[in-house]
Structures are given as structure tokens and as C-alpha cells.
Amino acid sequence: MEIENVDHIQLLVGNAFQAMHFLQSRYGFTPVGYQGLETGHRDHIAYAMVQGNTRIVVANSTNPSNSIAHEVRLHGDGVKDIAFGVKDAERCFHLALLRGACPVQEPAKKEDESGQVVTASIRSFGHMTHTFVQRVGGAAAFMPGFHPFHLSANSAPSRLVELDHVALTFPAGHLENGVSFYTSMFDLSVTHEENIVTANSAMNSKVVQNESATVRFPMMEPGSGRRTSQIEEYLHYNGGPGVQHLAFSCHDIIETVRLLCDGGVTFLQTPGSYYDMLAARVGSLKQDIEALRALNILVDRDEWGYLLQIFTKPITGRPTLFFELIQREGAKGFGSGNIRALFSAVEREQALRGNL
Image (cartoon, rainbow, N blue to C red; front, side):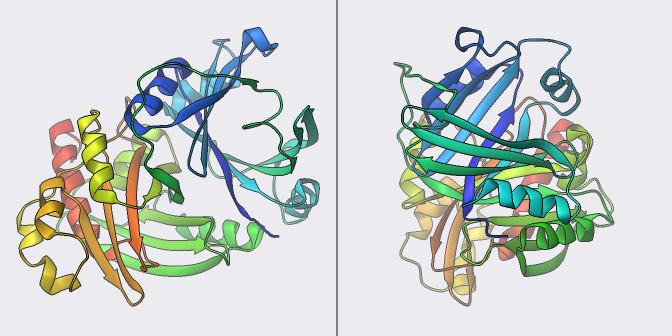
């Protein structure tokens, strides 16, 4: 099965209008499409947003008894659907069924004056789904069925280039099931594997991706530790497995973080001692270490190069979904050398929440 890219991410939220404003004013996403009562959609309201090569849809229920409302009550605001761009949605759907997938939506064609889209959906883990999206022609800014929408409001500078990866969490003992599902269902391959143990917690992880690395899923499960790990905290408040974070690439992470901080985005803090031995650990960098220290940006190196990354605090009312910003200078990994620093930063936040 040929998965070309992540076409879009759908988030189910309690208030799509507020979520749209938040993503626009804090992160620079631009609203381009709308569905709701005015467009003949009686059960939900949705806004489509774009930035760079990334599309995000935020949706809420207009009916307190429908499935969207039920899922938001159970899981809080978070990712519902990871849509894959494909050349033949119907073929991918039927191949997935042959491989044991549970159908959610049969192949359907949506069309407007700018083109057509064929979509079909299957069930993933927990409450999540995957939609196959085949785009024919321009097919509007987002999707037929969405009306053009523009909001005159102050937006954060547009600095995010594309979706780098989507991190998934699983309960203890279920990581291998997740890896098997994504490798056998979508023909993804395992590219990284590691087990991390810190003073308080542990984590097992694997990464699966397609051949072109346009679709990448770091997958994690908690190991046994003395304290509640960040993964266990996520699983508790999310009510099961799901998307822990979305990572967005950027060309200049220092400038991007400065601008986002000025706009009110809050990031995890890194102890100053992390930077004292940074040059010895990762070698020479294009960036100034003192600038990285001032902004709490982490650095890691692998055999291909290095990367810079930083993580936001949770962006919803529960300690679940957060964002990552990443700048790759040749590196193909995901910052494994920063796991302990990240765990320590998250554990400080967990302690404040009384969840450590």
C-alpha cells in the first residue's frame, strides 16, 4: 500500500471556533474552510486550517448526544483522524479490509467546481481513525463540502513548514500490536527502536515510517518505573491510546520559538546545566549555544547530522496533546539523546499537577 503523505489531521474539540482562534493567533495557522449549520451540516461545526504543507481540521458537535460529543467527553480535545494522501483511495480501503481493518466509511466521492476528492476511512487504535484521501484536480483549498472562510484577526507569523511526525502512545504491553498494525496494514517499516530508563520512569519505543519518510510515527509504551511516567499520565487523561504530540518542522527554530513565545506559547523548561556540556556532546553547531540556552531548545546528533527541538506544554485542558517544533540539520532520528532531559522537564510539570 502506497501512503504518500499525511493529508490532514482532524481534532475533535469542545469549541471549534475557539480552537481555530487559538491555532491562528498562537501558531500561525490560517483558516480557509468552514462547515456548519449554514452549509447544511447539522451535526457538527468544523474549520479547516493550513500552514505551509500542513492541514488541520478542528470540529465540535452541535448535538450533545452524537458521537463527536461523546468522544470529547471521554477523551477531551485531541486527534481523532490521521488522514493519508493516496493515489487510489478505493483500492487502499479494500486492501486494508483484506488485511483485517474495520471499516468506518465506504469510499465516497466529493466534488465541487475546483475538483474532486475520494475518501474512505478505517478504524485505528482506541477511538482514532485513518482516512484515505485521493485528490483529483485542485479540489478547493481543503475539501469539497467546506465553504471558503477567512477571518480578519491577528495571526502569529507563519513559520511552520510541514508535519514532521506524529507520536502515538499505547498502554504497557501493546506497543508490538501497534507496530504490527502499521507495518502490516500500511506497509510501513521499523526504522528506530530503543528502551529508555530514567531515575523515575521507563519507556519502550519504536518508529515506523514509509520509504520516503513523509509519514513517520514514533510509538511509545510505558515501562515499569518508580513514578507515574508522562506516557502513563497521557493514557490516564486521554482514556486510552492516542496521539501524544504533533511535530512541525521549521527552517529557523530560534527565530520561530522567539516569535511564538512573544505570542504567548509556553514551552517546557530545560535546566541550564544541560547546555554546559552540549558542545562536547553534539560537536559544532551552526547555532549559538547561548541562544539555545535562552530559549530552552534541545539538540541531538546522529550519524547523519543533528537536530534541534523543543516541546510545548499541553495545548488542551487535559495534560495530553502537545506540539513539538523541530529543525533537522541532516539528522534522521527523533532526539533520543534528549529523552532524559525531556522526561525530567515533563516530570517537573507532572509534580506541579500532583501526578508524579
